[in-house]
Figure 1 (cartoon, rainbow, N blue to C red):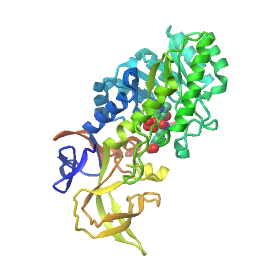
Figure 2 (cartoon, rainbow, N blue to C red):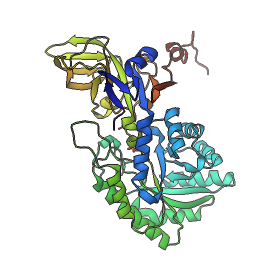
Figure 3 (spheres, rainbow, N blue to C red):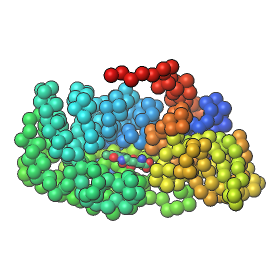
Figure 4 (cartoon, protein in one colour):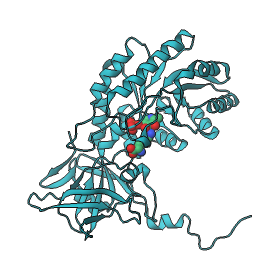
Length: 423
Ligand SMILES: Cc1ncc(COP(=O)(O)O)c(C=O)c1O
Ligand SMILES: N[C@@H](CCCC[NH3+])C(=O)O
């Protein structure tokens, strides 16, 4: 069910007209649907039936406080990759005991903060990281719960920039080295091995690579237990893809993914953890933007919109496709074929090429769909463009969770009236 639908030919988020939000908040603005977010969380949770997994939302996908607080109320945990994300998750009401800490470059300071908070586990990605964690925990007279992120050397068959489970990727420790690594954990002070973790990539549209990786992890857990390690958690990461193109075949549903996981686990008695990001938030958000100009180029038409690659980086970074819709539907409008671009001074600031669209003009509003994950979180201030606003809609109400950064604030960050070199 889509909560971004036309009512009287005006596109709404739930029961709020997007024209109302544009008028009140300005554009570009990210608009999230509370109902979609909640529904996606529940669909994923229910895919595992009685297994009752801990669902740690990948905060990197969307760290908006209203998004995190909504998921916290549903019972979600969090997968964080920095102290900042951990602080956000805690502040949104996610209990520390439901938080896992991933990432290849955790610093001693971040470890100390997470240990003090009392997080559920560190997903450790290298031997030097194990040594630093051991030293930090020992100094604090604490025991750090550790899962090793294993690199199963499986091709996730997704975009190369978001594939993480091949031997050549920087993530995890080779699955072939688990014996020596878990022996090392047992030998180091301040550490206890409680789990095994895997995450092979993002936007996977085929269950086969997941299955291959998970079979490997289940075998590892059995092997480690046989060697005396008390492995209680298995963290299967995130990565399940979402539909971006309405007319294309949709990726497997959470229920199919859940059944595959249940089959692979068999009678393995283990607490299950997942780290979905995109699946929960991706289609719960849109980017609302206004057409500035319709420009006739050399044999080509351009729509120049007020959003740019600094607000939504996905098309420029991954050639990602987002479906577009005009906010005012006009079924009689003549059709146009055009490139959609932003105002930034880079040819890569292109959202779509040769896209078919009902003809629009300057001042018209449109949305880019599926922007709830890896949208606002990846924005920057390139070209001194302020950070974009974010709005949460619930029923016929909406709240501005993050106002658009003011130009004054952005400029005052580093535009000192004079500068000097301090030596
Ligand atoms: C360790 C880890 N967990 C979870 C995720 C979330 O992935 P997705 O948004 O594809 O579910 C990512 C991103 O790929 C990740 O790197
Ligand atoms: N930023 C990527 C996903 C990265 C996943 C993080 N490990 C995207 O927009 O598709």
